[in-house]
Image (cartoon, rainbow over all chains, first blue to last red):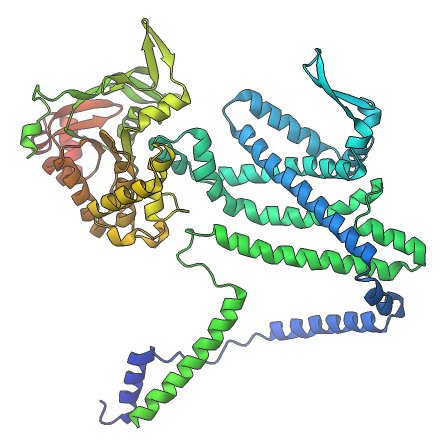
Length: 327
Length: 264
């Protein structure tokens, strides 16, 4: 065989050294993709054109105000609000979910009542409620034995500032939603996992912490990332009760300079920037919790790029090398 | 080797005492008055058609299922209840957990913790439950991995192991708690045929080391060769119970004969 086909020997040697040559076949034609891509590009071009030519965007003003110190300060407030509210939301959500699923009817009912109340009223109303908490509970709140003696008093107005009211309202509301996400995650873990852990003598709290929750994370993380992104934007509601965060600062600047659109663009650009950062963070957290669920972790986009390039190069250069020696 | 561990030898103390146990799921009766004694060092095999209650009986022994009526004791301790002044008191979760420490269990579907490597699976309970130091737990875990022939797989996650390897890790995980009794719930039923042998070899080795074992199995060869006693269950009762070789070679009861004729 090798006699009448002199290249076969070379091909076999090549295949042995670097694997078989990939199939070369004419690809299936997909005209639909090309047409839709062209239409999409057209829309993108129109939008870009509008962005550039429409003077009302005031790009020079956007550039000027994007890093204005008032805006930067407001961004910090937005980020703080988001982080504090999400911490309350996640910790509260895990607690509520565990309570809801516990065999203790008292805690299960308490968790259900909480979720019912905080999911059933608009977060904006809750925000206003917390802001006016003094009108509800009075100027002084005492802590002590119910219906009995009190140990210390707190001044309501100085304790619950607009910022704390916003954190509490957003966080406690978020806990109700997070509890449902965590509950779905816990329920997604196979019963056999708890049984195996129980048969090893582990107690319920430990089984939850060490075995069930880490596995539930795979289901919990994606919607939680969604919630964080959502919270970043929902925190703009705090502007209603006078917390100077990104939306409120932009709004104030508009009243100062009588230019609305550029400041909305500034705010939108910042929100977009942070949601993008969060999405990237979410990708890597998901990847971390996928440990053990797939044989090999999928490469990160960066690794993909690197690997494709490397493979292509090595295959080509190795092939050239081997051909050279066979000649 | 197992000959001196025959169950009827009076020298061997009772390890598990199952006394007239009843259990229903809803309205479906699963166990209808099962009694059985397993002695120290005995390998007791439970055989029978699916739905006959074998697995449920096994799960009652470590209180994964609560019995409706009857008593189960392991090493003279009532399972799931305290017996004081002629009254039964339900055990607190923490006492049930304590009781389970000395009863190892191996499941049909392995139930390894997928987010942990083989080694982490094995050291989890010794560290978290027995409070062993990480160093000691790892050293012991490596011995157990060697015992099941998987020294080189310590760092692998369960998905990177074959079914047979996963089941052997699961056995090592149970052994790491130094149990006095091992329960096997159809340990080879979820395995490809060519992987069954490795798991059975580990179990045989364990039996020869004198471990008390209750094994729910469809492997008649294993029951005959390694088992000391065999109990044939059908419809929630033990139909026939006796010396392993005798029950499998010359079943007395018609239902046992019919079952064995089918699985052979």
